Image (cartoon, rainbow, N blue to C red; front, side, top):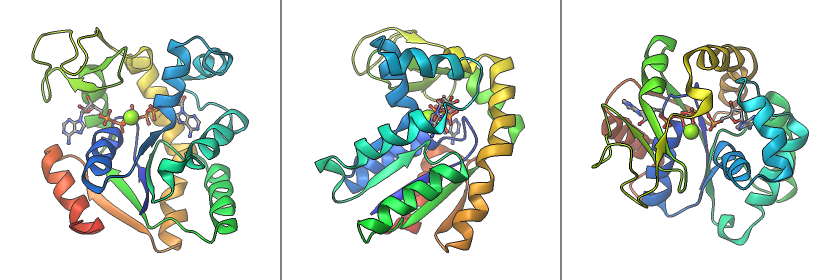
Length: 215
Ligand code: AP5
Ligand code: MG
C-alpha cells in the first residue's frame, strides 16, 4: 500500500504516519526527518537544506527529489510506504508519478489531514522533538514522562528552529501557495481522502484506518 500524507505544517502528518507505519507494517518516509538527520550529522546535504528550512522555505526540488527516490527504491519499500512531507510541490508529484508509472505502480491513497491555520500556530509552539531519534511530543497533548527528556532514547527534547512563531507563519504561506494545489491534483486522480485533523489524534487515526481498511 502506497500512501501520501498531505496537510499543513503541524497538521499531524508525522504523528499519523508513524501510527500508519506501525499498524500496516510499512516504512514511514519523511523528507523532513531525512533532512534533520543530515543536519545533525553535518553532511553537505544537511548544510544546504538548513539554509532553507530555518527560513521556513522549501528545500529546492533538485535536492529533495533524488533523496526521496533513492529512499523508496530500497528493499523495505517494496511492499509500500507512507510518505510524510513529500510531495510538496506539483513538480515533485509529477516526478513521483513518472517513476511509479515506470514500475507499473500508483499511489493508493493521499490522506489530507485538515487543520485550520489558527490551530497550527498553537500546536507548533508546544511541539518538542528529540535531537537523537526524531520522536515528537507536545507539552500539553503528549508530554514526555520526564520534562525535556525523550521517553524512547533518553536524549534531550528541543523546540525545532523552524517551529518559532515567525517561521511557522512563513511555512503556512509556503504551504498555501506551493503545497495546497496537490489536494486538487490527487482529487483528480481519485485517491484523495480528507480527514478532520482537529480532533484527538486517536479519533483521527480511526478515520484513517477506516479509509485504509482493517489490515
Ligand atoms: P517537515 O518536517 O515535513 O515539516 P512540516 O510539513 O512543516 O510538518 P511538521 O513536521 O511540522 O508537521 P506534521 O504535520 O508532521 O505534524 P506533527 O505530527 O509533528 O519539513 C520541514 C522542512 O523541511 C520544510 O519546511 C522544508 O523546508 C523541508 N522539506 C521537507 N520535505 C520537503 C519537500 N518534499 N520539498 C521541499 N522541502 C521539504 O504534529 C505537530 C504537533 O501537533 C506535535 O507536537 C503533535 O504532537 C501535535 N499533534 C498532532 N496531532 C494532534 C492532534 N490530533 N491533536 C493535538 N495535537 C496534535
Ligand atoms: Mg512532520
